[in-house]
Structure formats: C-alpha cells, structure tokens
Image (cartoon, rainbow, N blue to C red; front, side):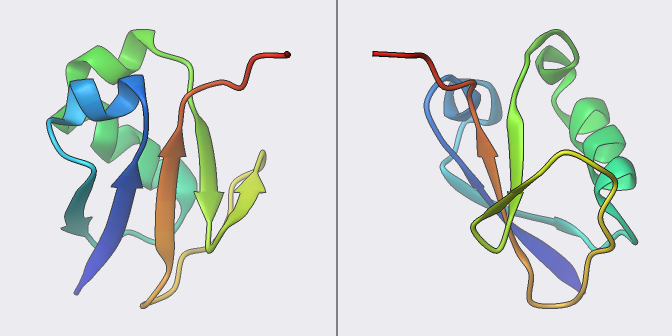
Length: 77
C-alpha cells in the first residue's frame, strides 16, 4: 500500500514532482521522517502538512486512501 503525496511551490522543487507516492506509514511523524530521508533538502525546509485538505500540527494517524499535501509556509499579503 502507498500514500498519495501532493507537493506545492518550493517543495515541488525539492521533490521533483507535484505528485508522487510513498510506502504506507502509520502516522504523520513517520511520514515526515521518511520524506526527509528520501529528500534530504526537506530537513532544512519548513513546510505545512495537510491530510485530506486539513492542515495538521500534531501527529496524525494515517489511513489507506489519505491524500497528503506538502505546502510551503504561507506569507501574509
């Protein structure tokens, strides 16, 4: 099983694609660790994680079918 990942803005520059998949992991903490291992440049980059279009700030359990978005920080305007 795998997790669908969407990346936006400068995060796409790091991942090389706006859509990719990763092997299924139990929660967002494990996903972030796996992402930083696969894309070392993410370790120095701040980003926001969204699960099914809802931003998350705490560790969140992942389920099959979840869509994860990696969003660069928002700036005011």
